[in-house]
Length: 133
Image (cartoon, rainbow, N blue to C red; front, side, top):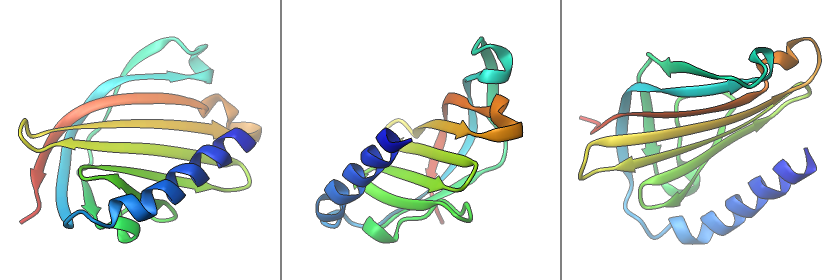
């Protein structure tokens, strides 16, 4: 867990000064599909996805994904890192948009302690990205 906290701190500190120079943008990410690996499935690959649209607002330290409890920081012109740390669950998510292709990538790593520890694992998805209206 200390390693995760160190990575989060590094990206947040590095991203603060770097990401502030980019213009704000907003993206709706849909049709995320890919693969997940969870402890409860002995980390065997499984087809997975997210059907709910995600609104990614890139605006330096004011970036958001619309997920309550997640801190989101822009780390590049079209990339953001989100994270949360609770007593039982630590989550890190990376969003990347390729505006010329209209594609978004999404990765998530989740460490869960206690009764739900079988949910620990990682996900990697690709989907569509369009600018917010």
